[in-house]
Length: 232
Image: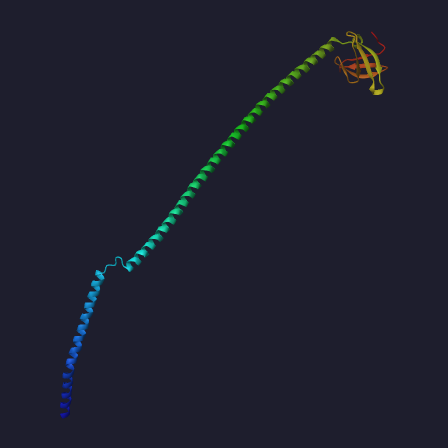
């Protein structure tokens, strides 16, 4: 019991001893918090009232902004240059397209002109061909008519009955073998000519020449002989 009283007495003594110290520590904490709050308020007011105009910090910010603006301006100028190049290329391309179109039209016109010339030349040649064919037909008709006239004349002569003995005189026979030739004289005109086998005299063909038989003439229907011994 005595010991309990002694312990309680000591405990109360310690409480009494520490109470002022605790109170002092609590007050100190409150004071420090108040000081911190005051410093924060002062810092906030200082920051709010701070004017950065003309300061080194503001100059740095301005320089950075100018640098960024210069870079942006440089990029914009580069883009404008690229756009100008693209516009020039576009204009050049349109000019080349127009030039090619003009050349194509010119070549098309040249081809059409050449084709027109060829067609005109073909038409001219066709006209010349037709004219030549007409001339040929006309010439053939004239030749046929002439042949018919000669045939009629020959038939008329045959019908008139040419008598070589009364019309011609055999002057002589020259040559040898198959190369014999005869010289005859026209009694009406006095002209003479040399004939050979195959020659035509007044529509008669010389069939043969010999010293014995003289000259034999034939027109296919009539045969006459001019003998060298018969002189008129």
